[in-house]
Image (cartoon, rainbow, N blue to C red; front, top):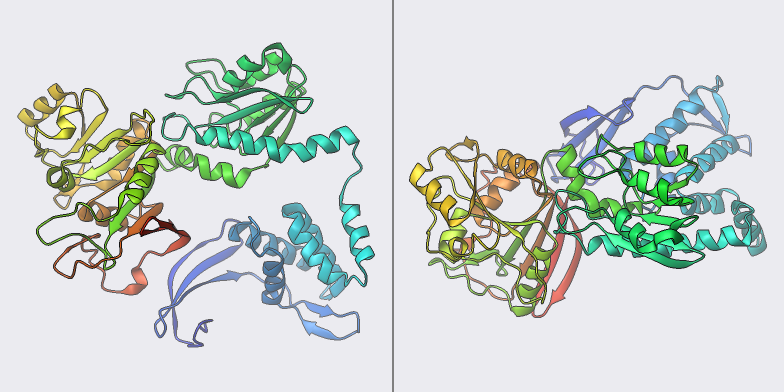
Length: 522
């Protein structure tokens, strides 16, 4: 397969797996010449199709050409690559099943427009503007007006208001990030006649749920109202009754939910119960933002691990301390203040035993005027941590979880228990704590979002295990040199084709320092 970057024909397949629709094989390829990586899909072709143009000209059907036109229409739209591939495969299967080898280009265009209309209106209009070749602005205006269904003024007003009220619900939910574990931080807004009559977010500790708090505020006025909620209302009875039962009892008329709950106890059942009770249900509004906000909760229940963000504060040459271990301060006060704000958005802050011994950190949220009891998680295989440290002195006041291995002595375990720490024995691997087991155990205890602050050995183990979801890096404008301590310990990497790739999300000046945020592409 020819490399799309340099043209080299000698490329290698590094990984093969079925695509989501199981009608194609997805292959990750590597170019030995330029180091580029790219993806190809292998599919079954039922018959050779020929496209007949309006001019009568005939040419062989080209799936790649079809994909390019659809990709252009979907550029910068919130549609996942896998969903686009699935749609294209569906179009090809539909063409092949027509029973004819000669397909009019007009038919292909109509099928593409029909498919795009189902997944993204903007992409549909983009494609149609080229396909229909509008000659005047009035032609385009007429076409767009036909997309709008005939609705009453009241319905139109409600539809136009939906994004505004969902944004309010999302903003409410974000206020609880780091405070509601093991439950997700959900936001809920109740509206009647265009007026907000009830608001709520999941309470600290996970109970009561957002819907219950919003209904309490709305009172009897909730009857006939519209409820905007960032996650599907729960339908199962746990420590309290289900939110669906509360909404039905209140007599609400409509529920607008951003995403479905991926907890197998709910996952569509909440919507089904509401609809069975005669309540109109609208889903998908604000889904991208809601997925972002709830991804820690989703990872815990699906992958049995928390969302993990790695923070790195480095010199320009990627060092976190001098050769003698001096690290205060790599960054300036504005960046350090932002780090405290980031801690406040997570359930826990995590460091390795080396960092705990060397820096004597408190790992608390300070300087923001807020009270947030973040969980301090420390990984120490032998539990050889100083008992006169700041962590030890505050263990009774703020949660301190110590992950250790089988080599930790009973004396040390009992001493830390007496100080108020929670002890978690984890499996070991190559004379280190098995980081995957650590993540599984803390997820089992309810953590959904972890902010990891070092050090280099812990960061390296997370990278090797492919457990990092986001990286937030801070670079300060000075050098330490090769004798300084690196931000990441050895990864034993011999071939660059094995490297993990992260996508840049944003860069920002934070005082004199540079902040950059990256997301795992896997």
